[in-house]
Image (cartoon, rainbow, N blue to C red):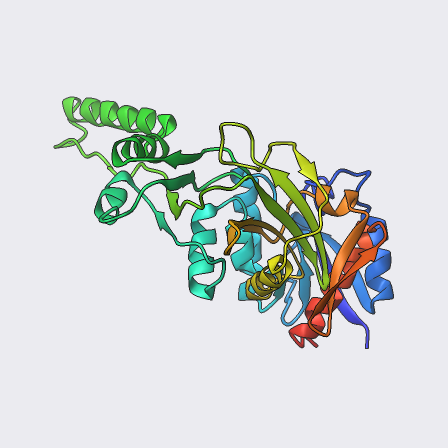
Length: 340
């Protein structure tokens, strides 16, 4: 039976803006979906009319973008689709987790995966109330963004407080607060208000996590259905972060890494995922994850991938065709969730 499937595009008609045109072809993607028994229907977010479109029990593929108001707009449309009973792939929670380390932490806490303790917080006062008997060093991350930007390793409470104050009370927030206060005072002096009313909730969220010491590298694992692509990333000199170091190599993973990645991938519930995994020689830890709008360097440059057969991992040679990997992953995912 052929299953109808929508592909949602942005205002430029792009499905996956993160992926360069030379790396991803929408037409090829549609062809592979058709070969997998789907009937793809291309539709822009802005073309959706909720007075006409029902979407009940329909499958809709979509992507994200880098923050800003357009990402908020996509969120509005996705919530409308959910209200109509549509089936979003990936699910809406994974869209919310995109470039949002705060909700990533909430998602992993609820679904119990990743093996790394952390907490999402919303203000400096939250940090003061929750730090308690926290052992140092700790890692503190701004909630927004991706990669290693605004990620700090702190060795004591004083430096942690300084960083949290910087992250949660951003310059834009402080300027806005001062302007609001100035306007409120003027309004009182002009007789438009009886008292100065200042809103104090101008702050930004952030995440604290346990620190995994003594790492000289981490592992980027891209999962497409039953295929696992692995990249080793060295930690930069005088740093603790591997993301963005540029020191990449395709190495066979240590024992247990792929088993750990598979457990995480199944908990995430997405057709494809990008996992950043650390290994201190004893345990594996999920540092971050994404399920949409992630980079493809690992899958596009790998000469082989890994597949599990009868509880054993098999190394399979060959270059990937990204459109096929995505289409196969979606078919695999739909079958696994029994979406008819």
